[in-house]
Length: 227
Ligand SMILES: [Zn+2]
Ligand SMILES: [Zn+2]
Image (cartoon, rainbow, N blue to C red; front, side, top):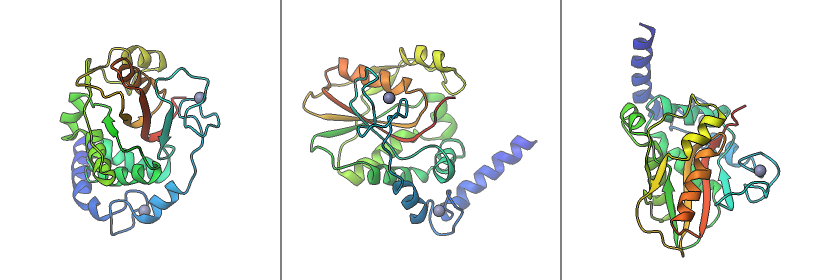
């Protein structure tokens, strides 16, 4: 019964929420300027994989196919409510806020840049009714006047969020394949929602590199260490 009530409440929130900031509850927008400012104003200068200081977003301790990375912020407070509502409470309109936050966090990008969203498992797309990272990627592409390409496709459909660290790396190794022609002159920016162990983006970046990409960067809406 509680679940049914929650579902009804969530549906109601999804209708009402376009007028409420999912960060602070203020009336007027889905995520207010103040909440955005507070997040972007917080400088991020740590490795997204181990949190050691790094101006590149990824430190020299890891062998990665990407050499720059950005996150909007740590998964806490207003950003946690925004990402959570978007992923788990059908607040579809939040894609614009997350795209805007990524837009504000990212530096000026090379002319030949392509955004590549991490693909969502079909079961989650069905549950949500939308491919959440594809929406964010397209929103960001519009803001930056840059293309979005779905070069990565799901090759297995395991659900990651209940898996431990070891399982995540094993699953990620077979999760995707590359579809399409990679241009070695382009910069590819992988877009993900939440970075935990980094297993997904490490594997995705490696696949792009094996397919011929020479410059691979990563941008994610938040980071939440597994432990
Ligand atoms: Zn707010
Ligand atoms: Zn590191």
